[in-house]
Image (cartoon, rainbow, N blue to C red; front, side, top):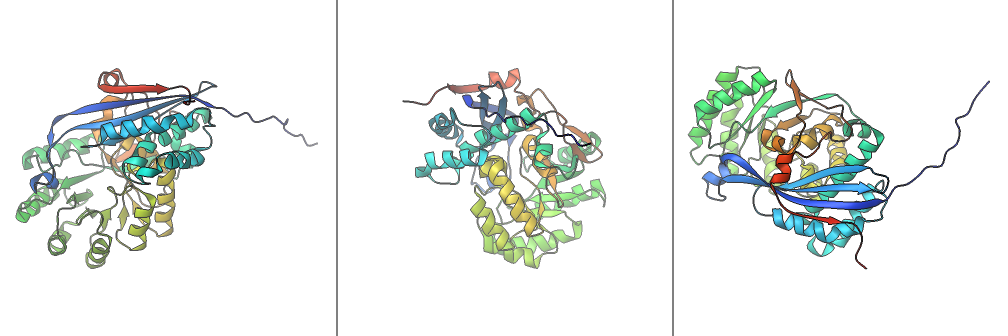
Length: 386
């Protein structure tokens, strides 16, 4: 005898409230990479974050964020506040349609950069809401390939960190359960770069993954020369050896070096990543969900990278990228940065070189009291203007 499940009517929900906040997260000490040593930027002292908290008529909630490491935080907040009323009364399930609606609402300022980074906070909140409502971790909602992801630390290896302190930092990372280490290079004194890499490789031994990041500060000749010099250290990748938008240069360099090339973190749209991938400009693609406009465009980039058989290492924001990296079918890494930890009540687990996908619904995050205290501006949208 066969039985059939009773037919029920699906119900939709509506967005009732969008709360936006601008948070300024102070760093413990000023941070310098190659862009500072070459005079292009000042040391980094804080991270500005745009948070979006979305609530529905049925009581479901979602949390998302975007960020800026230097100028741009107030502009992200202002743009998001202008377009957020477009969400009120909408079905939160229709994430792709809502992304496009918000993009058209701000079309006058473009479809990349600040305009889409403001959308990112909302888009991520909608995905978080959807996964929370399904009572699934975001990785499981999207379809995970793994329950943990190889992770490497970056925050302990900035150029502002003396070598001995950097070695101590790498040791603490390994003891915490982090699987690899990335250090900054791109010093105007290229011999200093070689000495730093040599010291870390000797400290780590031959089997711990080691990456370097030049933060776009080499020209073509320097990148090729230093890249060749670094090949004896068996690096997992060389990151951003050239200007982030020098697609042809990255492609030519990747063809000449044995060490894989990684780039993509500074790009702010799907189309920019599409050009990068089609040019063969990298071995590891490094999209950043808050920068490209959220999870919706990130998934398109991931599908493109998969079709081209690329490895992936999403940039920064491990709290988001852990879930997205877990859904990628090929080799993937997640970047460990403890900077954002004070913003949340939860912590991510590290074990045997990997970061564990939390079993909490959605992103598995809630804002801390400390985060609330760092809020400098906030607004709540409950209805659309007449």
